[in-house]
Amino acid sequence: MHENLRENLAEIRRRINKSAEKSQRSADAIKLIAVSKTHPAADLLAAMQAGANIFGENKVQEAEGKIRQIGREKAEWHLIGNLQSNKARKAVRLFDVIHTLDSVELAERLERICIEENVANLSVFAQIDLAKEPTKSGIDERDLPELIAFLKNCARLKFDGLMTIPPFDDDAEKTRPYFRRLREIRDELKAQNAFSNDFGELSMGMSGDFETAIEEGATLVRIGTAIFGSRQSKISG
Ligand SMILES: *Cc1c(COP(=O)(O)O)cnc(C)c1O
Image 1 (spheres, rainbow, N blue to C red):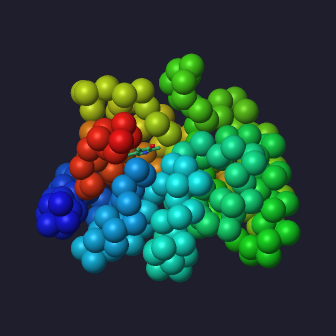
Image 2: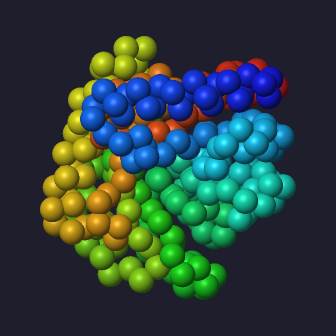
């Protein structure tokens, strides 16, 4: 299992480089988030041995145990799943980046908790709901200006980018319009100086479609299955 992991990571890096080259981008501008949800800390440690240093988790509770085991400072921790307000304090303590900011209410809460917890900076991405599927979360594009206006006045929250999850499709080409739209929104916001980091990260692309996402400008790809293998057996067990 852990031998595969090393090979899988090498293969993903090779494919990232190839897509970057194809779209005339620097591979250094694309960071790999190893999505380790459902996998035990031992797998994360093995991935670290193979060079992974950014992990994505979708549940605060599950991540907490692994982060404690591995060490908060040993890697960069990204929350990529929905954040319930009652988990916000834990999330502030555990994560470096939250990809799933989707309301002013949540931003208010995170800002207040950062102050209470003496957290100087918390990087946040707005998750945008482009497909408007009933099951997907994220903020509607139309509500984005209000969120951004609020973030401008936050001392602790740093608005650093955008994230989206397109509807699942076996055909990665079908996801391209969503990636392209997210980049357009990013470019508009960048022109308005909306981002704390000046450029605006694009968190988009998963195991099945990360190459398309890179062609459309992804700066962070979130890859689980193609690194750690299938999650199915672990979900049912
Ligand atoms: C699970 C998950 C991923 C990784 O998906 P894979 O298809 O396993 O690569 C990426 N992003 C989010 C938000 C996820 O929940």
